[in-house]
Length: 74
Image (cartoon, rainbow, N blue to C red; front, side):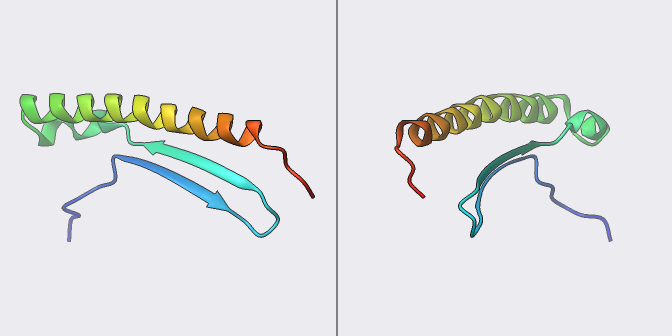
């Protein structure tokens, strides 16, 4: 059975017991999916991924700045 959906853009914050914080952004290369969409749909997906990536990068930078501004203690 073929999948009917796919993750195109994902942002994850991970925190482990040792206090390590990891941020991860994943975006999918949709170029191989182009034959399955109309020109309008493909263009919309490209725009959503591009704009979503910009916003998620802003969030990532904000989180880094906030953490760097805090005094960390052991």
